[in-house]
Length: 362
Image 1 (cartoon, rainbow, N blue to C red):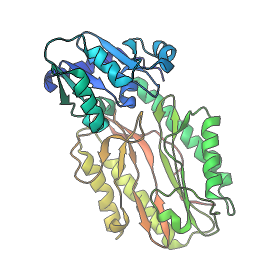
Image 2: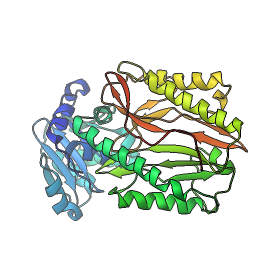
Image 3: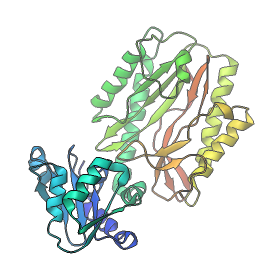
Protein backbone atom coordinates (compact mmCIF):
# COMPACT_ATOMS: atom_id res chain seq x y z
CA UNK A 1 0.00 0.00 0.00
CA UNK A 2 1.30 3.41 -0.92
CA UNK A 3 0.47 6.11 1.61
CA UNK A 4 0.00 9.47 -0.06
CA UNK A 5 -0.49 11.49 3.11
CA UNK A 6 2.45 10.17 5.14
CA UNK A 7 3.92 13.59 5.92
CA UNK A 8 0.64 14.96 7.25
CA UNK A 9 0.23 11.87 9.41
CA UNK A 10 3.72 12.24 10.82
CA UNK A 11 3.09 15.92 11.44
CA UNK A 12 -0.19 15.08 13.19
CA UNK A 13 1.73 12.68 15.42
CA UNK A 14 4.25 15.42 16.23
CA UNK A 15 1.38 17.53 17.55
CA UNK A 16 1.06 14.93 20.33
CA UNK A 17 4.63 15.49 21.54
CA UNK A 18 3.78 18.41 23.83
CA UNK A 19 0.87 16.54 25.44
CA UNK A 20 3.05 13.46 25.98
CA UNK A 21 5.98 15.68 27.05
CA UNK A 22 8.38 13.87 24.74
CA UNK A 23 11.03 14.74 22.19
CA UNK A 24 10.42 11.77 19.88
CA UNK A 25 8.12 8.83 19.18
CA UNK A 26 9.15 5.24 18.42
CA UNK A 27 6.58 3.19 16.47
CA UNK A 28 7.29 -0.54 16.53
CA UNK A 29 3.84 -1.96 15.69
CA UNK A 30 4.02 -2.65 11.96
CA UNK A 31 0.50 -1.40 11.11
CA UNK A 32 1.41 1.88 12.82
CA UNK A 33 4.66 2.08 10.87
CA UNK A 34 2.75 1.43 7.65
CA UNK A 35 0.14 4.05 8.50
CA UNK A 36 2.74 6.71 9.22
CA UNK A 37 5.23 6.22 6.40
CA UNK A 38 3.90 3.58 3.99
CA UNK A 39 6.45 0.84 4.70
CA UNK A 40 4.80 -2.59 4.34
CA UNK A 41 7.67 -4.92 5.20
CA UNK A 42 7.67 -7.40 8.08
CA UNK A 43 10.56 -5.84 10.01
CA UNK A 44 10.66 -2.16 10.81
CA UNK A 45 10.51 0.59 13.40
CA UNK A 46 9.93 4.29 12.85
CA UNK A 47 11.63 6.95 14.97
CA UNK A 48 9.82 10.28 14.63
CA UNK A 49 11.66 13.31 15.97
CA UNK A 50 10.72 16.97 15.79
CA UNK A 51 12.92 17.68 12.79
CA UNK A 52 13.56 14.30 11.21
CA UNK A 53 12.10 10.84 10.79
CA UNK A 54 14.01 7.55 10.46
CA UNK A 55 12.76 4.15 9.31
CA UNK A 56 14.89 1.36 10.75
CA UNK A 57 14.73 -1.94 8.88
CA UNK A 58 17.10 -4.70 7.77
CA UNK A 59 18.92 -5.50 4.55
CA UNK A 60 16.09 -7.65 3.17
CA UNK A 61 14.02 -4.49 2.73
CA UNK A 62 16.67 -2.03 1.55
CA UNK A 63 15.17 -1.65 -1.95
CA UNK A 64 11.54 -1.93 -0.86
CA UNK A 65 11.90 0.67 1.89
CA UNK A 66 13.45 3.23 -0.41
CA UNK A 67 10.66 2.69 -2.93
CA UNK A 68 7.77 2.84 -0.45
CA UNK A 69 9.02 5.53 1.93
CA UNK A 70 9.57 9.12 0.89
CA UNK A 71 9.07 11.00 4.15
CA UNK A 72 11.72 9.29 6.29
CA UNK A 73 15.40 8.47 6.09
CA UNK A 74 16.02 4.74 5.73
CA UNK A 75 18.53 3.21 8.15
CA UNK A 76 19.58 -0.39 7.51
CA UNK A 77 20.31 -2.05 10.85
CA UNK A 78 23.14 -4.58 10.64
CA UNK A 79 22.70 -6.03 14.14
CA UNK A 80 18.93 -6.11 14.65
CA UNK A 81 16.18 -3.49 14.81
CA UNK A 82 16.68 -2.56 18.46
CA UNK A 83 20.38 -1.92 17.89
CA UNK A 84 19.37 0.16 14.89
CA UNK A 85 17.03 2.22 17.06
CA UNK A 86 19.85 2.74 19.55
CA UNK A 87 22.12 3.87 16.72
CA UNK A 88 19.52 6.42 15.61
CA UNK A 89 19.16 7.63 19.19
CA UNK A 90 22.91 7.77 19.68
CA UNK A 91 23.06 11.27 18.19
CA UNK A 92 21.57 12.70 21.37
CA UNK A 93 23.94 13.51 24.20
CA UNK A 94 21.48 15.21 26.53
CA UNK A 95 18.39 13.85 28.28
CA UNK A 96 15.89 12.75 25.67
CA UNK A 97 12.31 11.53 26.22
CA UNK A 98 10.88 9.02 23.75
CA UNK A 99 7.26 7.81 23.60
CA UNK A 100 6.65 4.15 22.79
CA UNK A 101 3.72 1.73 23.00
CA UNK A 102 4.12 -0.65 25.96
CA UNK A 103 1.37 -2.87 24.53
CA UNK A 104 3.51 -3.55 21.44
CA UNK A 105 6.90 -4.00 23.13
CA UNK A 106 7.79 -7.03 25.23
CA UNK A 107 9.42 -6.68 28.64
CA UNK A 108 12.63 -8.07 27.16
CA UNK A 109 12.56 -5.62 24.27
CA UNK A 110 11.93 -2.68 26.58
CA UNK A 111 14.85 -3.73 28.77
CA UNK A 112 17.06 -3.96 25.67
CA UNK A 113 15.98 -0.52 24.48
CA UNK A 114 16.67 0.93 27.90
CA UNK A 115 20.12 -0.63 28.01
CA UNK A 116 21.04 0.36 24.46
CA UNK A 117 19.58 3.85 24.71
CA UNK A 118 21.60 4.62 27.79
CA UNK A 119 20.75 6.75 30.82
CA UNK A 120 20.05 9.86 28.72
CA UNK A 121 16.95 8.26 27.14
CA UNK A 122 13.73 8.13 29.15
CA UNK A 123 10.88 5.98 27.77
CA UNK A 124 7.29 7.22 28.13
CA UNK A 125 3.99 5.44 27.38
CA UNK A 126 2.30 6.74 24.22
CA UNK A 127 -1.36 6.57 25.25
CA UNK A 128 -2.27 4.81 21.96
CA UNK A 129 -1.45 8.01 20.06
CA UNK A 130 -1.12 6.41 16.62
CA UNK A 131 -4.14 4.17 17.10
CA UNK A 132 -6.20 7.26 17.86
CA UNK A 133 -5.00 8.89 14.66
CA UNK A 134 -5.79 5.74 12.70
CA UNK A 135 -9.34 5.59 14.07
CA UNK A 136 -10.48 8.51 11.89
CA UNK A 137 -9.98 7.68 8.21
CA UNK A 138 -8.93 10.30 5.69
CA UNK A 139 -10.68 10.53 2.28
CA UNK A 140 -8.06 8.37 0.58
CA UNK A 141 -8.46 5.62 3.15
CA UNK A 142 -12.24 5.70 2.79
CA UNK A 143 -11.91 5.14 -0.95
CA UNK A 144 -9.81 2.04 -0.29
CA UNK A 145 -12.19 0.76 2.37
CA UNK A 146 -15.19 1.15 0.07
CA UNK A 147 -13.33 -0.92 -2.52
CA UNK A 148 -12.43 -3.60 0.03
CA UNK A 149 -16.05 -3.75 1.22
CA UNK A 150 -17.30 -3.98 -2.37
CA UNK A 151 -14.88 -6.82 -3.04
CA UNK A 152 -16.00 -8.95 -0.11
CA UNK A 153 -19.67 -8.27 -0.86
CA UNK A 154 -19.12 -9.56 -4.41
CA UNK A 155 -17.24 -12.59 -3.10
CA UNK A 156 -20.18 -13.55 -0.88
CA UNK A 157 -22.65 -13.14 -3.73
CA UNK A 158 -20.45 -15.25 -5.98
CA UNK A 159 -20.04 -18.10 -3.51
CA UNK A 160 -23.78 -18.48 -2.80
CA UNK A 161 -24.27 -21.21 -5.44
CA UNK A 162 -21.54 -23.28 -3.71
CA UNK A 163 -23.36 -23.30 -0.35
CA UNK A 164 -25.19 -26.61 -0.56
CA UNK A 165 -25.47 -29.94 1.27
CA UNK A 166 -22.42 -32.17 0.97
CA UNK A 167 -19.86 -29.38 0.60
CA UNK A 168 -17.28 -29.37 3.40
CA UNK A 169 -16.83 -26.25 5.52
CA UNK A 170 -13.14 -26.18 4.60
CA UNK A 171 -13.92 -26.45 0.89
CA UNK A 172 -16.32 -23.52 1.10
CA UNK A 173 -13.76 -21.46 3.06
CA UNK A 174 -11.22 -22.24 0.36
CA UNK A 175 -13.60 -21.06 -2.35
CA UNK A 176 -14.07 -17.77 -0.52
CA UNK A 177 -10.34 -17.24 -0.10
CA UNK A 178 -9.63 -18.15 -3.74
CA UNK A 179 -12.30 -15.70 -4.91
CA UNK A 180 -10.71 -12.93 -2.82
CA UNK A 181 -7.41 -13.44 -4.62
CA UNK A 182 -9.12 -13.68 -8.01
CA UNK A 183 -10.73 -10.29 -7.43
CA UNK A 184 -7.43 -8.65 -6.56
CA UNK A 185 -7.34 -8.97 -2.79
CA UNK A 186 -3.93 -9.63 -1.26
CA UNK A 187 -5.39 -12.03 1.28
CA UNK A 188 -7.93 -12.50 4.04
CA UNK A 189 -8.43 -10.08 6.92
CA UNK A 190 -8.62 -13.10 9.28
CA UNK A 191 -9.09 -16.85 9.07
CA UNK A 192 -12.34 -17.38 7.16
CA UNK A 193 -15.16 -18.78 9.28
CA UNK A 194 -17.59 -21.31 7.86
CA UNK A 195 -19.59 -23.00 10.61
CA UNK A 196 -22.67 -25.15 10.06
CA UNK A 197 -25.31 -26.83 12.18
CA UNK A 198 -24.64 -26.89 15.91
CA UNK A 199 -21.10 -25.61 15.25
CA UNK A 200 -22.54 -22.30 14.05
CA UNK A 201 -23.12 -21.51 17.74
CA UNK A 202 -19.33 -21.24 18.08
CA UNK A 203 -18.82 -17.53 17.49
CA UNK A 204 -15.27 -18.02 16.15
CA UNK A 205 -15.43 -21.56 14.83
CA UNK A 206 -12.72 -22.71 12.47
CA UNK A 207 -13.90 -24.56 9.37
CA UNK A 208 -13.55 -28.34 9.43
CA UNK A 209 -14.09 -31.28 7.10
CA UNK A 210 -17.71 -31.45 8.30
CA UNK A 211 -20.07 -31.46 5.31
CA UNK A 212 -22.95 -29.01 5.20
CA UNK A 213 -26.29 -30.71 5.68
CA UNK A 214 -29.88 -29.91 4.82
CA UNK A 215 -31.92 -28.06 7.45
CA UNK A 216 -28.90 -26.39 9.03
CA UNK A 217 -27.83 -22.83 9.72
CA UNK A 218 -24.53 -21.83 8.13
CA UNK A 219 -22.54 -18.81 9.36
CA UNK A 220 -20.00 -17.35 6.92
CA UNK A 221 -17.62 -14.70 8.26
CA UNK A 222 -15.21 -13.45 5.61
CA UNK A 223 -12.92 -10.50 5.08
CA UNK A 224 -10.53 -9.29 2.39
CA UNK A 225 -7.43 -7.13 2.43
CA UNK A 226 -7.33 -4.83 -0.58
CA UNK A 227 -4.43 -2.41 -1.05
CA UNK A 228 -3.64 -2.62 2.66
CA UNK A 229 -7.15 -2.17 4.08
CA UNK A 230 -9.52 -4.73 5.56
CA UNK A 231 -13.18 -5.56 5.10
CA UNK A 232 -15.31 -7.80 7.32
CA UNK A 233 -18.67 -9.34 6.41
CA UNK A 234 -20.82 -12.02 8.07
CA UNK A 235 -23.97 -13.60 6.71
CA UNK A 236 -26.08 -16.49 8.00
CA UNK A 237 -28.04 -18.70 5.62
CA UNK A 238 -30.26 -21.77 6.02
CA UNK A 239 -30.03 -24.90 3.91
CA UNK A 240 -33.59 -25.86 3.10
CA UNK A 241 -36.86 -24.39 4.31
CA UNK A 242 -36.36 -22.73 7.69
CA UNK A 243 -38.92 -23.22 10.46
CA UNK A 244 -40.76 -20.13 11.68
CA UNK A 245 -38.77 -20.16 14.92
CA UNK A 246 -35.48 -19.73 13.06
CA UNK A 247 -36.95 -16.95 10.93
CA UNK A 248 -37.99 -15.13 14.10
CA UNK A 249 -34.48 -15.45 15.50
CA UNK A 250 -32.97 -14.10 12.28
CA UNK A 251 -35.34 -11.15 12.20
CA UNK A 252 -34.50 -10.34 15.84
CA UNK A 253 -30.77 -10.20 15.02
CA UNK A 254 -31.50 -8.08 11.95
CA UNK A 255 -33.54 -5.71 14.11
CA UNK A 256 -30.68 -5.48 16.61
CA UNK A 257 -28.26 -4.62 13.81
CA UNK A 258 -30.63 -1.93 12.57
CA UNK A 259 -30.94 -0.48 16.07
CA UNK A 260 -27.16 -0.30 16.41
CA UNK A 261 -26.82 1.28 12.98
CA UNK A 262 -29.46 3.84 13.88
CA UNK A 263 -27.57 4.81 17.05
CA UNK A 264 -24.37 5.64 15.17
CA UNK A 265 -23.57 9.32 14.68
CA UNK A 266 -20.78 11.73 15.65
CA UNK A 267 -20.75 12.51 19.37
CA UNK A 268 -22.30 9.20 20.47
CA UNK A 269 -20.29 7.01 22.85
CA UNK A 270 -19.32 3.60 21.48
CA UNK A 271 -21.04 1.87 24.39
CA UNK A 272 -24.37 3.45 23.42
CA UNK A 273 -24.28 1.66 20.06
CA UNK A 274 -23.72 -1.65 21.83
CA UNK A 275 -26.56 -0.89 24.25
CA UNK A 276 -28.97 -0.24 21.35
CA UNK A 277 -28.33 -3.71 19.93
CA UNK A 278 -28.76 -5.35 23.33
CA UNK A 279 -32.04 -3.55 24.01
CA UNK A 280 -33.44 -4.86 20.73
CA UNK A 281 -32.48 -8.43 21.56
CA UNK A 282 -33.80 -8.06 25.10
CA UNK A 283 -37.24 -7.21 23.73
CA UNK A 284 -37.22 -10.65 22.08
CA UNK A 285 -35.89 -12.40 25.19
CA UNK A 286 -32.59 -13.13 23.45
CA UNK A 287 -30.10 -10.82 25.17
CA UNK A 288 -28.45 -13.70 27.08
CA UNK A 289 -27.47 -15.35 23.81
CA UNK A 290 -25.49 -12.32 22.62
CA UNK A 291 -22.03 -13.09 23.96
CA UNK A 292 -19.64 -10.64 22.31
CA UNK A 293 -19.38 -6.94 21.51
CA UNK A 294 -21.51 -5.27 18.84
CA UNK A 295 -18.56 -4.27 16.68
CA UNK A 296 -15.08 -2.86 16.29
CA UNK A 297 -13.05 -0.39 14.32
CA UNK A 298 -11.70 -1.47 10.96
CA UNK A 299 -8.83 -0.29 8.79
CA UNK A 300 -5.26 -1.46 8.24
CA UNK A 301 -6.06 -4.06 10.90
CA UNK A 302 -9.29 -5.97 11.19
CA UNK A 303 -9.66 -4.91 14.83
CA UNK A 304 -8.93 -1.26 15.57
CA UNK A 305 -10.29 1.55 17.69
CA UNK A 306 -13.07 2.13 18.57
CA UNK A 307 -14.59 -0.96 20.17
CA UNK A 308 -18.39 -1.01 20.24
CA UNK A 309 -18.84 -2.77 23.55
CA UNK A 310 -20.50 -2.40 26.93
CA UNK A 311 -19.47 0.75 28.74
CA UNK A 312 -17.00 1.93 26.09
CA UNK A 313 -16.54 5.70 26.45
CA UNK A 314 -14.85 6.44 23.11
CA UNK A 315 -16.84 9.15 21.32
CA UNK A 316 -17.59 8.37 17.67
CA UNK A 317 -16.25 10.83 15.11
CA UNK A 318 -17.01 11.41 11.48
CA UNK A 319 -14.71 9.25 9.37
CA UNK A 320 -14.50 6.30 11.75
CA UNK A 321 -15.19 2.91 10.14
CA UNK A 322 -16.76 0.22 12.31
CA UNK A 323 -18.43 -3.15 11.99
CA UNK A 324 -21.94 -3.79 13.29
CA UNK A 325 -22.25 -7.49 14.08
CA UNK A 326 -24.79 -8.57 16.70
CA UNK A 327 -25.36 -12.30 16.97
CA UNK A 328 -27.06 -14.96 19.03
CA UNK A 329 -25.63 -18.40 19.81
CA UNK A 330 -27.85 -21.18 21.10
CA UNK A 331 -26.27 -24.49 22.02
CA UNK A 332 -27.69 -27.38 20.03
CA UNK A 333 -29.49 -25.14 17.54
CA UNK A 334 -26.76 -22.93 16.12
CA UNK A 335 -25.85 -19.29 15.70
CA UNK A 336 -27.00 -16.30 13.69
CA UNK A 337 -24.74 -13.29 13.05
CA UNK A 338 -25.20 -10.42 10.60
CA UNK A 339 -22.23 -8.11 10.09
CA UNK A 340 -21.64 -5.07 7.92
CA UNK A 341 -19.01 -2.35 7.65
CA UNK A 342 -20.18 1.26 8.00
CA UNK A 343 -18.55 4.68 8.08
CA UNK A 344 -19.64 7.33 10.56
CA UNK A 345 -20.89 10.41 8.71
CA UNK A 346 -22.52 13.65 9.81
CA UNK A 347 -25.87 12.06 8.97
CA UNK A 348 -25.23 8.74 10.73
CA UNK A 349 -23.97 5.36 9.55
CA UNK A 350 -23.34 4.81 5.85
CA UNK A 351 -23.03 1.22 4.61
CA UNK A 352 -19.82 0.14 2.92
CA UNK A 353 -20.69 -3.55 2.48
CA UNK A 354 -23.63 -4.23 0.19
CA UNK A 355 -24.41 -7.96 0.39
CA UNK A 356 -28.10 -8.67 0.84
CA UNK A 357 -29.33 -8.94 4.42
CA UNK A 358 -32.40 -10.88 3.31
CA UNK A 359 -32.77 -14.24 5.07
CA UNK A 360 -31.56 -16.70 2.45
CA UNK A 361 -32.91 -20.25 2.29
CA UNK A 362 -30.72 -22.20 -0.10
